Image 1 (cartoon, rainbow, N blue to C red):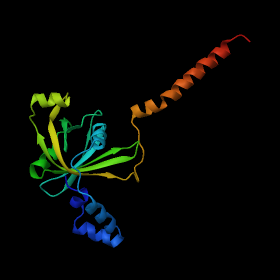
Image 2: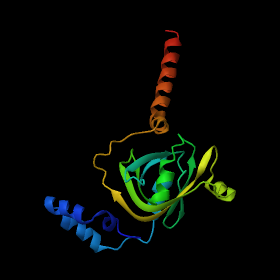
Image 3: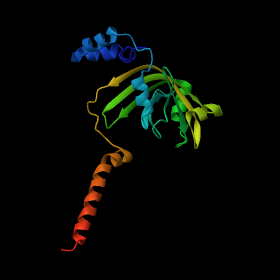
Image 4: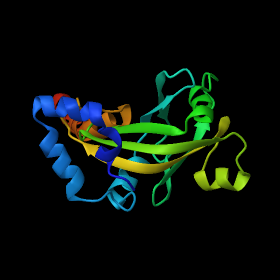
Length: 200
């Protein structure tokens, strides 16, 4: 894999870094260590626990576009040392990402764990298969109305700092967090009702 900074920091970006005094820090980080061999256990676990992420691509007209992808946790599969695969569910049928990939297969992905304020950024080459083999769909556990399979060969990734990530929680996460409180309220209500019903 390549170093994330080697792909994202060109001459223009470095000029701004020099202007603001951050160039040396980033250049040291880039040159101090080679890029990783692939996605590690932490990255694989993080990605496979996500219920959504954002993917950016660029069309033939030069305009970038960002789309949301979501599903039950585990809908993204790490299918190789540096490969992600997921089933593309039927949406609004605009096919923007699919069309972009016909022109330029480069994509950027950002996945966020809002409760724990973590985010992972990935760069890669993607391909869309509108007619995947049934055994691949079975391996992915893909069900429902599908448009095909999208696979990303990751070439670089970087963990981002938690700054400015506002914690957000799903309904299920809120339900799990408040379950002990609701249980205790129920116990207290039962105890109170029994006390009020007891003869004085």
